[in-house]
Length: 145
Image (cartoon, rainbow, N blue to C red; front, top):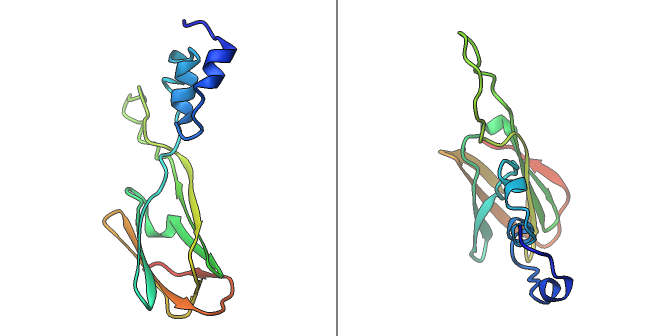
């Protein structure tokens, strides 16, 4: 275990590095080995004059486990991963690496979204959103097909 030196360790504090790296540097390497946490929802956002086009990686989810909420220019994507119990016939789980729980990502866009003409489609682990631009808007949940 490395010795914690408050002055030199604080001096090299980088707010942009991951918490895993921070704790590893403090000597907690083994304590985080089996710590399960969700990976963030990864996004690609492009825009044209009419809409924002968003691709969000959500592999392994069912369409009914994903929701997209829009309030003005604020977009929130959430997905719930449910644990499957596949034990039986004398089998037991030795190791489980798939995350169970909530994934969540929210962000703001440059303009309000027209929820009446926007679309959401989920195929092959990718959520495609076409969020049409609007001068004014109101909160609504998009239906995913």
